[in-house]
Image 1 (cartoon, rainbow, N blue to C red):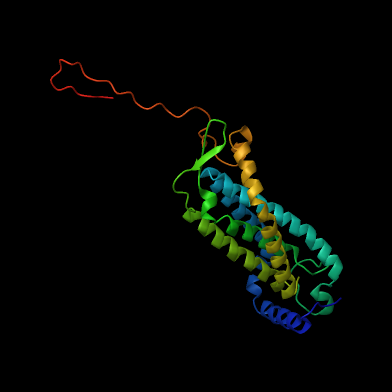
Image 2: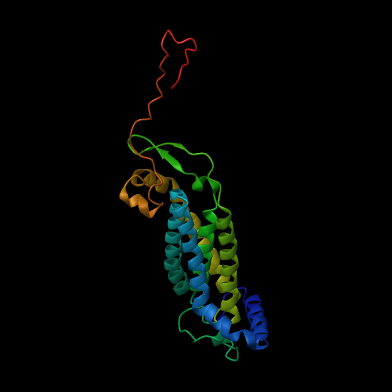
Length: 257
């Protein structure tokens, strides 16, 4: 199929952005690199930075949500291949041979965009990690099982900045793929939404992931989810201080711990 529905809207927006691209030659170099590799690298770097913050702040549940998001993104990339071979939409420069193309022309299908799948999956993953409950530290008892959650645990402000930055970087990557002439607008929208749905579906496994964290966190494997020394495990509660009375002959009879 040359152009998927809505054909008119896809083609008109694509040609309008292509016209805009022709008149912004000063941005061609940057947009070429951003649409090809720089955009995915920056989105992935912010994702990794968010995981590093969760690890450093000793928030294994937030780290687990990011792991689930990464798995959901990989699942979306696999589904993207199935959807692409089912739709069989040709690249826009096949239907519009006179269009300006700033990247090497590929022979694979255009719908959905795999770059937008990466952008959508990693962006939604970071947004999911904003849940304040995921940033609470946990206190462990004698057998390493959680007894209670510590107070506090609000989302770090830096994580909110990272989430906003990743959203902007991801959406700009989708724009860049159309700007360089590699995709129709519908391709990038479909890829972004496909990844978002896949990540949200995989995130439904969070109860199982939280249970797994409670089991492995006191072990060496837990160091992959939080900074070492974050968990207080084992041992009975500290004994209460013993009171001793002063000698009977002492007129002041102080009671000291």
